[in-house]
Amino acid sequence: MRDDAARAALSTGPLADLQDPAPIIHTELAFAGKVWDIRRDTFSFGQGDSRHAVVREYVDHTGAVAVLVMDADDRVLLINQYRQPIGEREWELPAGLLDVAGEPPLQAAQRELAEEVDLAASDWSELITFHTTPGGSSETLIIFTATGLVATPTFDRTEEEAEIIVRWAPLAEVVEAVLAGRLRNSILIVAVLAAYARRR
Figure 1 (cartoon, helix red, strand yellow):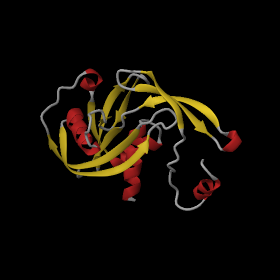
Figure 2 (cartoon, rainbow, N blue to C red):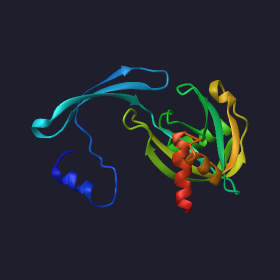
Figure 3 (cartoon, rainbow, N blue to C red):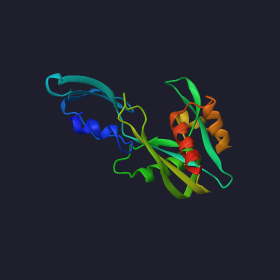
């Protein structure tokens, strides 16, 4: 933290994250991956005599979007997809990377909805934005809510997406499953709890 005034500002007033980047001394690409890269930053941290260099490695993420699809009966569209890092098939929301140069997040969300579940929506709104794993990734994820659904041509899905299973479930049922610990996908948890809280 830069000074005592900034520290005091965090102790009072509305809760909010603070833009307070540490000066970067050196940055390098530690590993170039197929989907994500690993970056190594050396940055200056601390104040006065306690200032020192710190090295951190993290996933240099493109960012991503997800879509909470709701129908007229207050049901949520879920997809079940295999995830190799955890060796499980998780219930998730349609989602994808911001990996097309210059593509706005809303357009990316619309593209992912068509690619993963063959749907388009007429009504879109931003539900919530969050950092998925700030201790190890630069990813910022934007969740949109989509309603007013129409079918689109079937998309030719490959690899893990070729085995996606789609299921509709009442929002209250999904919230109950989250709170009971039966659903553990972080994006799904954030989305349904945010939507449920906003409705209350």
